[in-house]
Length: 438
Ligand code: SF4
Image 1 (cartoon, rainbow, N blue to C red):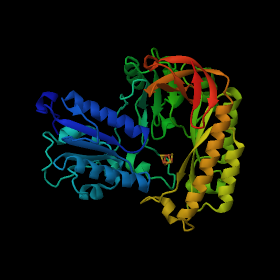
Image 2 (cartoon, rainbow, N blue to C red):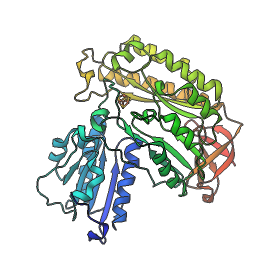
Image 3 (cartoon, rainbow, N blue to C red):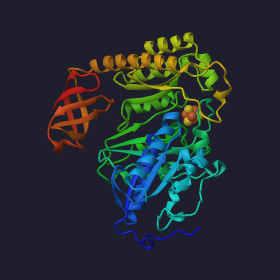
Image 4 (tube, rainbow, N blue to C red):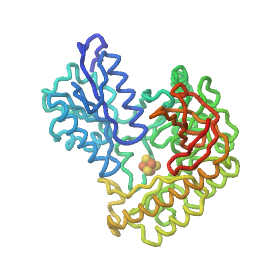
C-alpha cells in the first residue's frame, strides 16, 4: 500500500491522545508512534481531554491488563464520542475480534501494523467501514526501532522484540512473534541519535533483551561493549535480563564499565525447581543464586530486582515456602510480585491443580512484605554515604531522582537541578525513598 507523504494530511488543529498499557517496550513504541503524528502536524493532548484521534497501545499480559484496555476505550469514547479510536498492539494482535467488537473502536492494528497507521487511514474519521487490519503472527518478523522521548532525563531504547522461549504461562511470544533485533552497528546509530538529545540515561529494553543478536553472529555482550563507548550519555541501564543469558563475563565487564550502572533486574519466577520445570524456565534456582553471588562479589553495591510469580497452577504451599526461603536467602534489593493469571492458548492451562484466588492474594501479600524488608535493608546500607544522583523531576519544592544503583532520592533543591548529576549524601531511609542532602 502506498505511503502518503506528510503534506497529504490536512490535519491542522487535529488533536491526538495516546495511552500506553503494559511494559516499557510499549511505552517506547507509543512514543515513536506519537512522533509520527506530530511530524504530520497533529497536536498531542492529554488522554483525559477531548481529542480527534485516540491511540491505545494495548497489553494482554494479565486479565487486569485486558480490563485496563477496555477501560481506556470507554474513557476515549466518553471524552469524545465522535473520535477515531484505534486499539493497537498486543491485545489487538491476540484478540482482534474482541477488540473490533468493543463499542466505539474505529481501528484494530496488531504489533506490526501499529507503525503503519498512516498507510491505512488518511482522514481519521470514525465512520469507516467495518474493516480491521491485524498482523498474522507469522508475519511478525520485522524489527521496528522505538525509543521514548517524553522524559528529558531517561530514554527507553528498544533493542530487541519477540521471544523464542516457551514459558508455559506466557502469551507474549504469541503477541510479539519470534525473537528479533537489528545489528550492533544500526543499534549504535539509534543510541547516538538519543545521545544528541538532552537525555542523560538510556535504558535498554526488549521482550527478552539478552537474546539480542539471535540468529546472527553478534550477541548482547557485543552490544554492551560497543554501547560502553558511547559519548554524551552518562548512564546505561539494562531493564531486565534472563538469568541464563546474563553471563559471568558480562557481569565482570559491567563491574568495570564506564557507563553501565550497578543495577540488574532478573526474572526468577519461582524458587522451586519443580515449578520452574512446569513453567519451562531455562534454569534451575542454583544458577540464579550463582548469578546473584557473582554480581555481589564484583559489585557489592549493586541493586538487584527480581520478578516472581505467585499462584502458578502447580505451586503447592511447600513450593511457595521454598520460594520464600530462597528469596529470603539471596542478597537482593526488591521484588516485583505478579499473581498468576491464566491466559488463552498457553500450556499452563493444562495443569489441573489450580491455586485459589484468595491463596494467590495471600502469597502475593507475603512476598510484598518480603520485598519491603529487602528494600529497607538495601537502602539502610547506604545511609550516611554519598552517591551520585541523576535528578529527574521537581515536585512541590523537592527534587527527585535515582542513584546509579537505583535508590530513589528526594532532596530539597531547586528545579535547575533537573537533568543533572549531583553528589548527594543519603541521610534517612523513608521506606519508599531516601532523603538526600545535596
Ligand atoms: S522468556 Fe518466557 S516469560 Fe519472558 S517473554 Fe519469553 S516466554 Fe514470556
